[in-house]
Length: 254
Image (cartoon, rainbow, N blue to C red; front, side, top):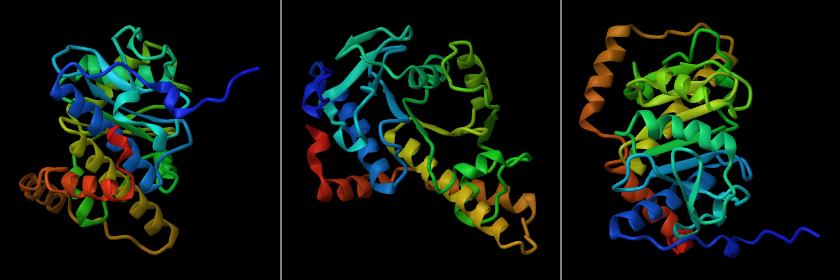
């Protein structure tokens, strides 16, 4: 008989440096905040972070844990081939394919966030892309790539196309599938997802009215995006978000 999976069974190796431990804590916080925002999907979807001081190793959560069960100490560490270096050898194949695409090819992005938020996922089917309609999504103007659906992401070759379609962007809309955002920090990746979801929710809500839409001039979107460069995503929001999760459940730090 298969034994019941318990969160305490997923203890991984301890961090080898203060920087590595902080990366684990930030990644665990991303999982908890994702759950708090209602963007989680039971045990599916994934967040990852590059292991400090390595080229292609990264942390991910063990497949089977709910987001509220993920902690700093129960992450698993994998290499570019999908070999588990620390923790139980139980890797979400699609998660490895999607995230290794970024960690192998875009090393400047230390954190990767993949989600299927129920309030926004319908926007992935817009044939001509997701329209920009409101100010607080303008920070992403010109920073969103698109990746055509290839079925479940279990083919290693798809990694090259994911990496190419992301390019220098901070967000990737995976058509008929979900969203991917990246960042040098956990806060940047998280807030890029936050504003990408806001963009999608607004587009869906506006189109649902059936009323005529004013998309505004492209020059205004470019100007607004440049103005937002003074407000780096996550710089101010991440400390505040950590205070929120600390108040609700600080066990992610364990």
